[in-house]
Length: 91
Image (cartoon, rainbow, N blue to C red; front, side, top):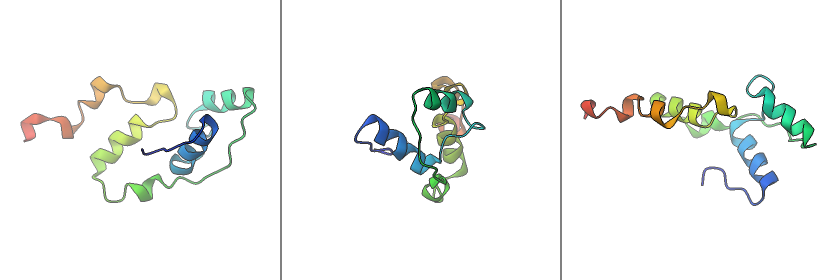
């Protein structure tokens, strides 16, 4: 798995270690929810770009939008199919 967590809290920490800590800029509602639940995540710089350095820019863009913290910013399955790698006419 990309984000192997051993518990709910460990799962959140694992995601933050890779994607970077959730901020007001990337998901204001998530920050507010964490405060409400009294969850304080350690601050991590994203290691995501390092993990993706050998991937094509199109794949990285798709994964970035699919893994966005803000659910409203995530790509839908229908829209994901519009990405160039799924265009069968290019085969």
